[in-house]
Length: 331
Ligand code: ACO
Image (cartoon, rainbow, N blue to C red):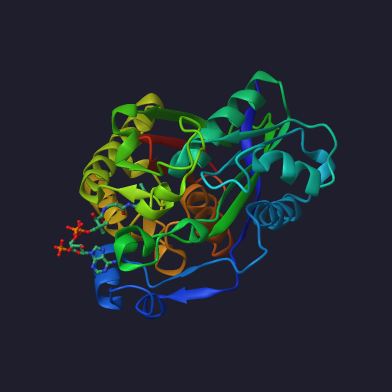
Protein backbone atom coordinates (compact mmCIF):
# COMPACT_ATOMS: atom_id res chain seq x y z
CA UNK A 1 0.00 0.00 0.00
CA UNK A 2 1.42 3.46 -0.84
CA UNK A 3 1.61 6.21 1.74
CA UNK A 4 0.83 9.91 1.34
CA UNK A 5 3.64 12.45 1.03
CA UNK A 6 3.32 16.24 1.11
CA UNK A 7 5.39 17.25 -1.92
CA UNK A 8 4.48 20.94 -2.21
CA UNK A 9 3.19 23.74 0.00
CA UNK A 10 1.86 27.21 -0.78
CA UNK A 11 -0.09 30.06 0.75
CA UNK A 12 -1.68 33.38 -0.03
CA UNK A 13 -2.72 36.17 2.29
CA UNK A 14 -4.38 39.44 1.20
CA UNK A 15 -2.15 42.49 0.97
CA UNK A 16 -4.26 44.63 3.30
CA UNK A 17 -2.77 44.57 6.81
CA UNK A 18 -5.24 45.40 9.60
CA UNK A 19 -3.47 46.30 12.82
CA UNK A 20 -4.99 46.23 16.28
CA UNK A 21 -4.79 50.01 16.27
CA UNK A 22 -6.94 50.12 13.14
CA UNK A 23 -9.59 48.02 14.94
CA UNK A 24 -9.80 50.64 17.69
CA UNK A 25 -11.33 52.94 15.05
CA UNK A 26 -14.34 50.59 14.68
CA UNK A 27 -14.87 49.19 18.19
CA UNK A 28 -14.03 49.73 21.82
CA UNK A 29 -10.84 47.69 22.13
CA UNK A 30 -7.09 48.20 22.50
CA UNK A 31 -3.86 46.79 21.17
CA UNK A 32 -2.95 45.85 24.72
CA UNK A 33 -6.18 43.83 25.30
CA UNK A 34 -5.89 41.99 21.99
CA UNK A 35 -2.18 41.15 22.36
CA UNK A 36 -2.57 39.99 25.95
CA UNK A 37 -5.67 37.79 25.38
CA UNK A 38 -4.92 36.49 21.87
CA UNK A 39 -1.30 37.19 20.85
CA UNK A 40 -2.57 38.82 17.64
CA UNK A 41 -0.89 42.04 16.46
CA UNK A 42 -2.25 42.23 12.92
CA UNK A 43 -4.27 40.22 10.42
CA UNK A 44 -4.94 40.37 6.69
CA UNK A 45 -8.38 41.27 5.39
CA UNK A 46 -9.46 41.08 1.76
CA UNK A 47 -10.31 44.15 -0.24
CA UNK A 48 -13.37 44.28 -2.51
CA UNK A 49 -13.43 41.72 -5.28
CA UNK A 50 -11.10 39.11 -3.78
CA UNK A 51 -12.77 35.71 -3.44
CA UNK A 52 -11.94 32.62 -1.42
CA UNK A 53 -11.61 30.74 -4.69
CA UNK A 54 -9.02 33.19 -5.99
CA UNK A 55 -6.99 33.04 -2.77
CA UNK A 56 -7.19 29.24 -2.94
CA UNK A 57 -6.03 29.34 -6.56
CA UNK A 58 -3.01 31.49 -5.70
CA UNK A 59 -2.02 29.22 -2.81
CA UNK A 60 -2.52 26.15 -5.03
CA UNK A 61 -0.36 27.51 -7.86
CA UNK A 62 2.43 28.15 -5.33
CA UNK A 63 2.08 24.61 -3.94
CA UNK A 64 2.14 23.10 -7.45
CA UNK A 65 5.25 25.09 -8.35
CA UNK A 66 6.88 23.93 -5.12
CA UNK A 67 6.00 20.33 -6.04
CA UNK A 68 7.27 20.89 -9.61
CA UNK A 69 3.92 19.72 -10.87
CA UNK A 70 1.26 21.08 -13.19
CA UNK A 71 -2.45 21.42 -12.43
CA UNK A 72 -3.01 18.57 -14.89
CA UNK A 73 -1.25 16.24 -12.42
CA UNK A 74 -4.06 16.67 -9.86
CA UNK A 75 -6.49 13.75 -9.62
CA UNK A 76 -8.80 15.24 -6.96
CA UNK A 77 -9.36 18.42 -4.93
CA UNK A 78 -10.31 18.60 -1.26
CA UNK A 79 -11.08 22.07 0.10
CA UNK A 80 -11.88 23.09 3.66
CA UNK A 81 -13.74 26.33 4.36
CA UNK A 82 -16.54 27.65 6.56
CA UNK A 83 -16.85 30.75 4.39
CA UNK A 84 -17.56 29.59 0.83
CA UNK A 85 -18.03 32.19 -1.88
CA UNK A 86 -21.64 30.96 -2.29
CA UNK A 87 -24.17 28.89 -0.35
CA UNK A 88 -23.72 26.33 -3.16
CA UNK A 89 -21.83 25.00 -4.98
CA UNK A 90 -18.73 24.85 -2.82
CA UNK A 91 -15.45 26.60 -3.60
CA UNK A 92 -13.87 23.31 -4.73
CA UNK A 93 -15.53 23.31 -8.13
CA UNK A 94 -14.73 26.99 -8.73
CA UNK A 95 -11.11 26.23 -7.89
CA UNK A 96 -11.17 23.22 -10.22
CA UNK A 97 -12.44 25.42 -13.04
CA UNK A 98 -9.98 28.22 -12.33
CA UNK A 99 -7.06 25.79 -12.36
CA UNK A 100 -8.14 24.79 -15.86
CA UNK A 101 -9.20 21.29 -14.88
CA UNK A 102 -12.18 19.62 -16.49
CA UNK A 103 -13.53 16.63 -14.64
CA UNK A 104 -11.52 15.83 -11.52
CA UNK A 105 -13.68 15.57 -8.39
CA UNK A 106 -13.80 18.47 -5.94
CA UNK A 107 -14.96 17.90 -2.37
CA UNK A 108 -15.70 20.71 0.08
CA UNK A 109 -15.21 19.91 3.75
CA UNK A 110 -17.20 21.70 6.43
CA UNK A 111 -15.26 21.08 9.59
CA UNK A 112 -14.36 24.71 10.33
CA UNK A 113 -10.96 25.11 12.05
CA UNK A 114 -10.41 21.35 11.69
CA UNK A 115 -11.13 21.43 7.95
CA UNK A 116 -7.52 20.95 6.89
CA UNK A 117 -6.88 17.97 9.18
CA UNK A 118 -10.25 16.43 8.22
CA UNK A 119 -9.34 16.98 4.56
CA UNK A 120 -5.95 15.38 5.08
CA UNK A 121 -7.66 12.36 6.59
CA UNK A 122 -9.90 11.95 3.53
CA UNK A 123 -7.12 12.58 1.00
CA UNK A 124 -4.78 10.19 2.79
CA UNK A 125 -7.41 7.43 2.69
CA UNK A 126 -8.01 8.02 -1.02
CA UNK A 127 -4.29 7.87 -1.77
CA UNK A 128 -3.54 4.82 0.38
CA UNK A 129 -6.48 2.93 -1.13
CA UNK A 130 -5.20 3.69 -4.62
CA UNK A 131 -8.32 5.61 -5.65
CA UNK A 132 -6.36 8.78 -6.43
CA UNK A 133 -2.62 9.32 -6.77
CA UNK A 134 -2.29 13.10 -6.38
CA UNK A 135 -4.65 15.27 -4.33
CA UNK A 136 -4.67 19.06 -3.94
CA UNK A 137 -5.71 19.92 -0.38
CA UNK A 138 -6.63 23.51 0.42
CA UNK A 139 -7.79 25.46 3.47
CA UNK A 140 -9.17 28.90 2.74
CA UNK A 141 -11.14 31.49 4.64
CA UNK A 142 -12.62 34.93 4.22
CA UNK A 143 -13.72 35.83 7.72
CA UNK A 144 -13.55 39.61 7.46
CA UNK A 145 -16.74 40.09 5.40
CA UNK A 146 -18.76 38.18 8.02
CA UNK A 147 -17.62 39.88 11.22
CA UNK A 148 -19.47 42.35 13.39
CA UNK A 149 -16.74 44.96 13.69
CA UNK A 150 -18.75 47.10 16.10
CA UNK A 151 -18.20 46.82 19.85
CA UNK A 152 -21.03 44.24 19.98
CA UNK A 153 -18.89 41.75 18.03
CA UNK A 154 -15.46 42.65 19.38
CA UNK A 155 -14.79 39.33 21.14
CA UNK A 156 -14.73 37.56 17.76
CA UNK A 157 -13.89 40.35 15.35
CA UNK A 158 -10.40 40.84 16.75
CA UNK A 159 -9.54 37.16 16.31
CA UNK A 160 -10.12 36.42 12.67
CA UNK A 161 -8.19 36.97 9.48
CA UNK A 162 -8.37 35.93 5.82
CA UNK A 163 -6.00 33.67 3.92
CA UNK A 164 -5.40 30.41 2.09
CA UNK A 165 -2.95 27.54 2.32
CA UNK A 166 -2.50 24.54 0.04
CA UNK A 167 -0.54 21.32 -0.15
CA UNK A 168 0.03 18.82 -2.92
CA UNK A 169 -0.26 15.26 -1.68
CA UNK A 170 0.95 12.32 -3.70
CA UNK A 171 1.38 8.58 -3.34
CA UNK A 172 4.85 7.45 -2.37
CA UNK A 173 6.33 4.00 -2.13
CA UNK A 174 9.08 5.39 0.13
CA UNK A 175 8.48 3.73 3.52
CA UNK A 176 10.51 6.39 5.33
CA UNK A 177 8.19 9.34 4.68
CA UNK A 178 4.56 10.31 4.56
CA UNK A 179 1.42 10.55 6.67
CA UNK A 180 1.65 8.05 9.54
CA UNK A 181 -1.89 8.54 10.79
CA UNK A 182 -4.80 10.92 11.14
CA UNK A 183 -7.30 10.96 14.00
CA UNK A 184 -10.48 13.03 13.72
CA UNK A 185 -13.39 13.62 16.12
CA UNK A 186 -16.45 15.75 16.72
CA UNK A 187 -18.93 16.51 19.50
CA UNK A 188 -22.15 18.08 18.25
CA UNK A 189 -23.37 18.84 21.76
CA UNK A 190 -21.37 22.04 21.42
CA UNK A 191 -22.51 22.99 17.90
CA UNK A 192 -23.93 26.32 19.07
CA UNK A 193 -20.96 27.25 21.27
CA UNK A 194 -19.26 28.74 18.21
CA UNK A 195 -21.56 29.21 15.23
CA UNK A 196 -23.38 31.45 12.82
CA UNK A 197 -27.13 31.04 13.10
CA UNK A 198 -28.26 32.71 9.87
CA UNK A 199 -28.77 32.37 6.94
CA UNK A 200 -30.52 29.07 7.65
CA UNK A 201 -32.47 26.68 5.41
CA UNK A 202 -34.61 25.91 8.47
CA UNK A 203 -36.25 29.28 7.90
CA UNK A 204 -38.19 30.70 4.99
CA UNK A 205 -36.91 33.17 3.98
CA UNK A 206 -33.48 31.93 5.01
CA UNK A 207 -32.56 35.33 6.37
CA UNK A 208 -34.87 38.15 7.41
CA UNK A 209 -34.46 41.82 8.19
CA UNK A 210 -35.03 40.88 11.83
CA UNK A 211 -32.17 38.34 11.70
CA UNK A 212 -29.88 41.05 10.38
CA UNK A 213 -31.09 43.55 12.96
CA UNK A 214 -30.34 41.00 15.71
CA UNK A 215 -26.94 40.21 14.20
CA UNK A 216 -27.73 36.52 13.66
CA UNK A 217 -25.67 36.53 10.46
CA UNK A 218 -22.55 37.18 12.56
CA UNK A 219 -20.64 34.41 14.35
CA UNK A 220 -21.09 34.09 18.10
CA UNK A 221 -18.93 32.25 20.58
CA UNK A 222 -18.84 31.35 24.24
CA UNK A 223 -15.12 32.02 24.41
CA UNK A 224 -14.40 30.42 27.77
CA UNK A 225 -15.99 27.12 26.72
CA UNK A 226 -14.07 27.09 23.45
CA UNK A 227 -10.87 27.72 25.39
CA UNK A 228 -11.54 24.96 27.92
CA UNK A 229 -12.37 22.31 25.32
CA UNK A 230 -9.57 23.32 22.93
CA UNK A 231 -6.83 23.01 25.54
CA UNK A 232 -8.17 19.58 26.54
CA UNK A 233 -8.96 18.04 23.15
CA UNK A 234 -5.81 19.14 21.32
CA UNK A 235 -3.27 17.52 23.70
CA UNK A 236 -5.56 14.48 23.96
CA UNK A 237 -5.68 13.89 20.19
CA UNK A 238 -1.90 14.41 19.89
CA UNK A 239 -1.42 11.74 22.55
CA UNK A 240 -3.88 9.49 20.71
CA UNK A 241 -1.80 9.83 17.52
CA UNK A 242 1.48 9.20 19.33
CA UNK A 243 0.11 6.10 21.07
CA UNK A 244 -1.23 4.71 17.77
CA UNK A 245 2.28 4.97 16.30
CA UNK A 246 4.17 3.83 19.38
CA UNK A 247 5.82 7.26 19.65
CA UNK A 248 6.30 9.79 22.44
CA UNK A 249 6.03 13.57 22.74
CA UNK A 250 9.83 13.75 22.71
CA UNK A 251 9.80 12.24 19.19
CA UNK A 252 7.93 15.26 17.77
CA UNK A 253 10.27 17.60 15.90
CA UNK A 254 7.66 20.19 14.98
CA UNK A 255 4.11 20.83 16.17
CA UNK A 256 1.82 23.02 14.08
CA UNK A 257 -1.27 23.76 16.13
CA UNK A 258 -4.31 25.43 14.61
CA UNK A 259 -3.75 29.13 15.22
CA UNK A 260 -6.89 29.78 17.26
CA UNK A 261 -5.40 32.05 19.86
CA UNK A 262 -1.83 32.22 21.18
CA UNK A 263 -3.01 31.48 24.72
CA UNK A 264 -4.63 28.26 23.52
CA UNK A 265 -1.49 27.21 21.61
CA UNK A 266 0.74 28.04 24.60
CA UNK A 267 -1.46 25.98 26.91
CA UNK A 268 -1.41 23.03 24.48
CA UNK A 269 2.38 23.33 24.23
CA UNK A 270 2.67 23.48 28.01
CA UNK A 271 0.41 20.47 28.54
CA UNK A 272 2.43 18.44 26.06
CA UNK A 273 5.72 19.67 27.52
CA UNK A 274 7.20 20.85 24.20
CA UNK A 275 9.94 23.52 24.00
CA UNK A 276 9.33 26.76 22.05
CA UNK A 277 11.54 25.82 19.11
CA UNK A 278 9.32 22.83 18.35
CA UNK A 279 6.07 24.79 18.04
CA UNK A 280 5.02 27.04 15.17
CA UNK A 281 3.11 30.25 15.96
CA UNK A 282 2.32 32.89 13.37
CA UNK A 283 -1.00 34.14 14.76
CA UNK A 284 0.64 37.48 15.66
CA UNK A 285 0.77 38.31 11.92
CA UNK A 286 -2.33 36.64 10.49
CA UNK A 287 -4.86 36.15 13.29
CA UNK A 288 -7.07 33.07 13.12
CA UNK A 289 -7.61 32.12 9.47
CA UNK A 290 -9.62 29.04 10.49
CA UNK A 291 -9.22 26.23 7.89
CA UNK A 292 -6.17 28.01 6.48
CA UNK A 293 -4.03 28.39 9.61
CA UNK A 294 -2.28 25.01 9.44
CA UNK A 295 -1.37 25.01 5.72
CA UNK A 296 -0.20 28.66 5.92
CA UNK A 297 1.96 27.86 8.96
CA UNK A 298 3.27 24.71 7.25
CA UNK A 299 4.21 26.62 4.08
CA UNK A 300 6.05 29.20 6.21
CA UNK A 301 7.77 26.52 8.29
CA UNK A 302 9.09 24.86 5.13
CA UNK A 303 10.38 28.17 3.79
CA UNK A 304 12.07 29.12 7.04
CA UNK A 305 13.92 25.79 7.15
CA UNK A 306 12.11 24.48 10.22
CA UNK A 307 11.41 21.07 8.64
CA UNK A 308 13.97 18.56 7.43
CA UNK A 309 13.79 15.14 5.81
CA UNK A 310 12.96 12.54 8.44
CA UNK A 311 11.46 14.99 10.94
CA UNK A 312 8.29 14.01 12.77
CA UNK A 313 5.66 16.69 12.10
CA UNK A 314 2.48 16.84 14.14
CA UNK A 315 -0.59 18.85 13.09
CA UNK A 316 -3.40 19.44 15.55
CA UNK A 317 -6.67 21.32 15.18
CA UNK A 318 -9.77 22.21 17.16
CA UNK A 319 -12.77 24.23 16.12
CA UNK A 320 -16.44 24.89 15.76
CA UNK A 321 -18.65 21.82 15.86
CA UNK A 322 -16.82 21.00 18.04
CA UNK A 323 -14.45 19.22 15.68
CA UNK A 324 -10.84 18.29 16.33
CA UNK A 325 -8.09 16.12 14.94
CA UNK A 326 -4.39 15.41 14.57
CA UNK A 327 -2.00 14.10 11.97
CA UNK A 328 1.49 12.67 12.30
CA UNK A 329 3.72 12.99 9.26
CA UNK A 330 7.25 11.75 8.67
CA UNK A 331 8.73 14.61 6.57
N1 ACO B 1 -11.50 44.29 23.38
C1 ACO B 1 -11.70 44.73 24.64
N2 ACO B 1 -12.50 44.10 25.50
C2 ACO B 1 -13.10 42.96 25.08
C3 ACO B 1 -12.92 42.46 23.80
C4 ACO B 1 -12.10 43.17 22.92
N3 ACO B 1 -11.87 42.78 21.66
N4 ACO B 1 -13.64 41.33 23.69
C5 ACO B 1 -14.24 41.13 24.86
N5 ACO B 1 -13.92 42.11 25.71
C6 ACO B 1 -14.36 42.32 27.08
C7 ACO B 1 -15.61 41.57 27.40
O1 ACO B 1 -16.74 42.33 26.99
C8 ACO B 1 -15.53 41.48 28.91
O2 ACO B 1 -15.95 42.66 29.46
P1 ACO B 1 -16.81 42.64 30.82
O3 ACO B 1 -15.92 41.98 31.83
O4 ACO B 1 -17.04 44.08 31.06
O5 ACO B 1 -18.03 41.84 30.50
C9 ACO B 1 -14.04 41.36 29.15
O6 ACO B 1 -13.38 41.79 27.95
C10 ACO B 1 -13.60 39.96 29.46
O7 ACO B 1 -14.28 39.11 28.56
P2 ACO B 1 -14.10 37.60 28.65
O8 ACO B 1 -14.93 36.92 27.59
O9 ACO B 1 -14.24 37.16 30.07
O10 ACO B 1 -12.60 37.56 28.21
P3 ACO B 1 -11.66 36.36 28.25
O11 ACO B 1 -10.58 36.64 29.20
O12 ACO B 1 -12.40 35.09 28.37
O13 ACO B 1 -11.08 36.45 26.81
C11 ACO B 1 -11.30 35.40 24.72
C12 ACO B 1 -11.90 36.37 25.67
C13 ACO B 1 -9.93 35.90 24.28
C14 ACO B 1 -12.18 35.27 23.48
C15 ACO B 1 -11.17 34.06 25.47
O14 ACO B 1 -12.40 33.63 25.95
C16 ACO B 1 -10.54 33.04 24.69
O15 ACO B 1 -9.35 33.03 24.51
N6 ACO B 1 -11.35 32.11 24.17
C17 ACO B 1 -10.93 31.12 23.27
C18 ACO B 1 -11.71 31.27 22.07
C19 ACO B 1 -10.87 31.52 20.87
O16 ACO B 1 -9.78 31.98 20.86
N7 ACO B 1 -11.46 31.17 19.79
C20 ACO B 1 -10.81 31.28 18.57
C21 ACO B 1 -11.74 30.96 17.51
S1 ACO B 1 -12.29 29.34 17.70
C22 ACO B 1 -11.12 28.36 17.19
O17 ACO B 1 -10.36 28.67 16.32
C23 ACO B 1 -11.02 27.08 17.84
